[in-house]
Image (cartoon, rainbow, N blue to C red; front, side, top):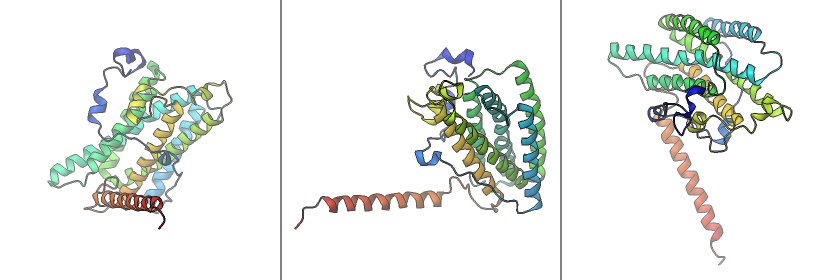
Length: 286
């Protein structure tokens, strides 16, 4: 779905229309869901402390190498998010694969977690496929992605074999940093002086693949896109932190049927109360 393939169909996403058919859970965020809370899970164990500090060390090195603490530009933003999304899509797939094989060995259900982690991996990959339509990475950049993917994928896979809960806490902290990064990007776009490249993202149309995936509408901008991506990262943050506390037999925290039924009932009751109040207000006075 790179820039050189965009003209192959009306969506402008190359031959990737099938992405939409198979990913039935892709997001359509409501306005109030886009304004996320920047939260932090305080370490409660030695394992949590190791995970947190490992993420801090990696971020410090990456920020220094990419000059992220200086002036924020569109080039820096795209270079950073494209690279990070190639790595961010790894943990969900690793978790899904390991849990899939465990379910086969134990001949037991997985509580919907396999599908949740597959969706997480797909969601992160869609971030990547969207951003690469805005900047075509160089050969050197692509080579560094291959090396980092091999190193991180191997290391994360081995760690998941030993301690899955440590890995999910690690991912939760990574997603906290991702939320902070995207918040910084959003603030930079919204405060950028008129005429600058960053300011153009306030009105520039989002790539068509992103408009379709996040249902941004015909007028969806790059800024709208980044708000949606940040909301995704916040959800991954909360899910991975919550998975650490799960016990055998617990179900997918994102799609818990009981919570969904409760939410549906609450919406029904609110709708009926609103309808009743509206009817009473329209009745003629006796």
